[in-house]
Length: 405
Ligand SMILES: Cc1cc2nc3c(=O)[nH]c(=O)nc-3n(C[C@H](O)[C@H](O)[C@H](O)COP(=O)(O)OP(=O)(O)OC[C@H]3O[C@@H](n4cnc5c(N)ncnc54)[C@H](O)[C@@H]3O)c2cc1C
Image (cartoon, rainbow, N blue to C red):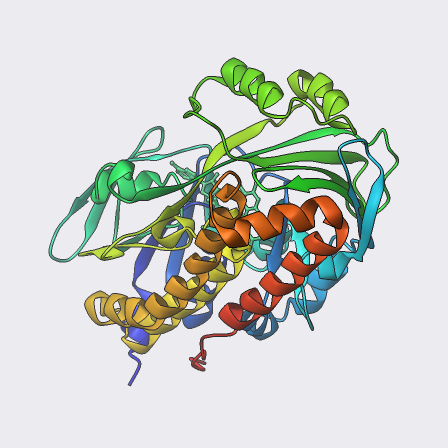
């Protein structure tokens, strides 16, 4: 039987006000816990890149009563135009087909989803602009010191602070132990919507190099996006070098690429990172537990990071409630339920990355692919997208959620 007196007095610190952190706070609050969020950014970031919510994660949005709000605030992408190196149209797809969405699947800007989630937790304490500095664990509590605020005691800490998690670094050790780079880089930045795209995406793709520009519903600007393999490692801390390398790697592609590179230095939000997954044998250490990208990042290549974050949050909070705050029971059960689901969804990212990296490999299938790419590039791209939609859909639905309330 759930002990509500224990739950009421249980203080839980969540590091990160992203999708995972905000969803966890919502469910913890629903069950009567006292969550507090600490977020490094000075305010909730708005806009951002497009993310998908699919499969079983949609059930969580429905249980939260926000499915319609997310759908209404969705990107409403009407279509995608596939282009060749010269910018000539080689194929067209609907927005949903291009984004691997089936049925009720949704797409929304990351910041807009976070805003909707934050609107659901008006009575949760959120501290912006600060970081956890240290976590000391005791048998009955944790003591947390912050960079700016005074230290405080909590019962548990949830690390939902993303791929480069601070909580993981403090409690579990160096990121390099857990990070598996997929051999691809991703770059996204805002540009003026000079093509007047209206809920439309344009994309150039070949094995090893993808370039895209899109603008979604309500955006006055557009986003430039590049996903590519590189012959040598790129320094993730050197922006000038990154921008120079990008230009070299995309040499020979005309279309809008030179223009997008001209706009790159003035972009307000240049994002550049290696696509990576997080693989850990255990997501909890005594009173600290990891969630979302911090624990099991599947990479943007999987298209499933957001759904994994939402489902993980739902299960973690639900299991803590069922176990009346017994963290050992709850954290074990959370891992037990999530492990297989995470593995299936991480496999999507690995397959997508391997396809991108296959150029130049000497085998028959790649030879056929390259041949087809030259003969009918638009049809081949559509075929590959449709094939991966089936796999994503299967993986996105491969978990049965319990009813906790
Ligand atoms: C370019 C790009 C494209 C993507 N496309 C898709 C897609 O199409 N579909 C999809 O499902 N997923 C996509 N993803 C992945 C998706 O964004 C993540 O998987 C998902 O947001 C995971 O949520 P999270 O809350 O675990 O982590 P995050 O969204 O990374 O949130 C972590 C939060 O923690 C905060 N934080 C970081 N460090 C600290 C700290 N030290 N202290 C306190 N707070 C901190 C951050 O500011 C952030 O608010 C994409 C990601 C990127 C980068």
